[in-house]
Image (cartoon, rainbow, N blue to C red):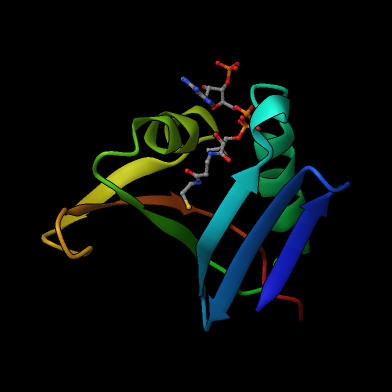
Length: 104
Ligand SMILES: CC(C)(COP(=O)(O)OP(=O)(O)OC[C@H]1O[C@@H](n2cnc3c(N)ncnc32)[C@H](O)[C@@H]1OP(=O)(O)O)[C@@H](O)C(=O)NCCC(=O)NCCS
């Protein structure tokens, strides 16, 4: 489990599993949004991923349009729809290939 923070205004939580990294949660204080804090936290997370990480993904609620625009805005693409991932709605999975070279 890893955490990236931006002062007290932003927090990103991720989990590593082999070559995969899942963004479990990302949150920016509402008055601080649209100031590229979210983007910076993703960039900081990417920079600290271990060698061998190949793919980063996140699942959002189908209704969370802002999160979806955010993921696209920072370079993710839709990789799938998870039917009824949440109790009453679908989840949309966003993914990004990363090419952290293996250390030798
Ligand atoms: C999603 C969230 C983390 C984005 O953080 P942020 O710091 O406001 O995002 P950024 O300023 O880094 O935005 C980067 C890009 O994402 C997109 N984006 C972000 N917010 C957007 C919005 N409200 N509308 C449209 N596009 C948006 C844009 O492409 C933006 O680049 P641009 O401003 O040059 O157009 C923030 O809105 C949030 O905390 N939301 C509530 C929690 C949540 O839903 N988390 C995700 C599910 S776990």
